[in-house]
Length: 309
Image (cartoon, rainbow, N blue to C red; front, side):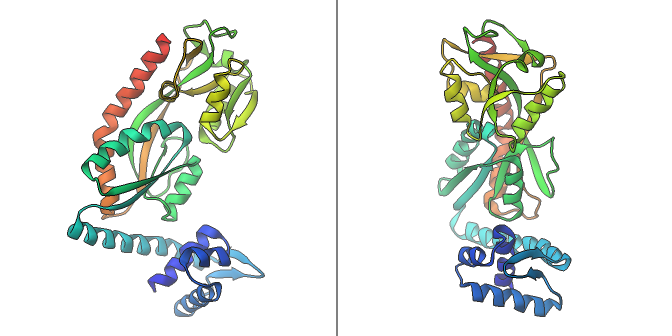
């Protein structure tokens, strides 16, 4: 039964029989036969079939929800037994939104000191992708905004508050200012994240509140690429204070606080809402609770630092 539920999860992730079979390490006929056997056991059709995968039936969607719970609990059980025998080990998979990547090391570094046998894989993903990966058991935890979009069945640990700065050259029109307003930022040609990123949607909303639209002259899903353009002195962008400090300010590059209003977003750790948690995830939650005050302190220090820059 468990292997057939794994097939259902793979189909949900890949939306394609062949790719789902490949991720499960079986042939496509084996996967198709397993799904049909599960349908016979349930007495209902689970998958809409045609020349290719066409989605799940309503009954299939319910089975998919149960499959996530059952397979997740099975993984948790195996990890807990292994941890009891050998201590905490394995690979911890984390997906973070691009603006939070600079903060990940503040969480993973102390975690590794406590649990040296744990390895990490960290992905940069949109907020929606973070939740999708979490739901499909493709990651163990996510770091994302926790106040703007429905999070679903997750447990949340608030980590820090994100505050925004205008990154611009010191000799640019607003470069000599101690602070700027969102209305002023709206009149600057900006390079911003792509519209699929929640950070971009937040910035667009703040700019629109001034009665003006954002005017990005360049869009990218990479904060490094945006920052490299700002460093040329010919571009401006809006970034979190801590990220701007981490990437590196120079004498000619300023990070200016954006006020009126000062927008603040909460970034948090999200993990599947499951009891008991897998040991590797439970340890991450405990670490997050320990380091959250320090993470918020670092963000506030970055705010002070960028105000002086």
